[in-house]
Length: 392
Ligand SMILES: *Cc1c(COP(=O)(O)O)cnc(C)c1O
Image 1 (cartoon, helix red, strand yellow):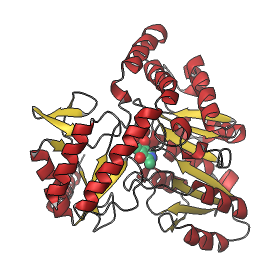
Image 2 (cartoon, protein in one colour):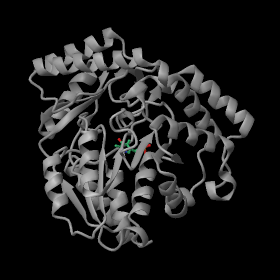
Image 3 (cartoon, protein in one colour):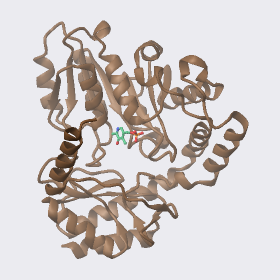
């Protein structure tokens, strides 16, 4: 490698540092479901997506260990070679039943899933050369990555603005296949999409509806099955994607869809075809989480009560929380330096609440992204609320 190339890397990294945008990995040690250890200090954790505290649940750990002993630590190959175990098929059947769809298909991570699935769905053999693809402006980076990989033009609609989406849909070329791509709970704003409204629009305009439930899975909808599993929309979303790494305390992702769409993905989704299947210990942890999920309504109620209390404290402190109605509460500070200062203040008080800044969120909306968990105690929520009020 030429030294000129590597020197340009140094220059570019220095540029990021100068702009205050250089990212670094900071090791932490897991401690309890609600705390972590960093640099020898115990911090109350308000930045984890372990919304139900399942990542440290003994049943998940036991079943992961049991399945590792019984079935091995690795799946040994891609699903299409000899990596499809009975456990993969059984879990897919379970997910399809949970979501009310014909079929489901597992993927190795949410990022990989969105990228692989969107580029397969928009393959020119089925979507033609110029599909009309409508994406919520705040959709996750992994969906944009999939659309870029597919090489299609993205038409971005204003966040959660179904009127804007309807206008754009009506302007699409009459013979172009249409796709609507969005999330049910937005990862940085904690607000919800109107799934029934989206389903109605998709039906009117003959569009394929794609919804990412990474932050709703386990937390919202009937017994935590997600917003797309609610009775009025069940079966009306063409493809529901979700992940196991957040509320389910594990790792990996799935799509729930028709048998025909699943068949297409098995044949065209590179991230499935060319990647080793999810390993048995991970499948065991997911299986245990799905056993626990239906009985966790009390935990979900506690989680939502925590979020209500934190939103109330933000309102008292004069910090907007946008349209948040979920366990994700953005405490918006505006300028990047204000968000960083707030993070430092909370950290001094022993609280971890990571500041989220552009380009992850739009300029001028830097925030503390507060992610709550049923594992937080009332006392821990009270501590957070006191610190938020002190920011005022
Ligand atoms: C976290 C996230 C993903 C990625 O899932 P991973 O399993 O963490 O790769 C995809 N979509 C959304 C909306 C997310 O928040």
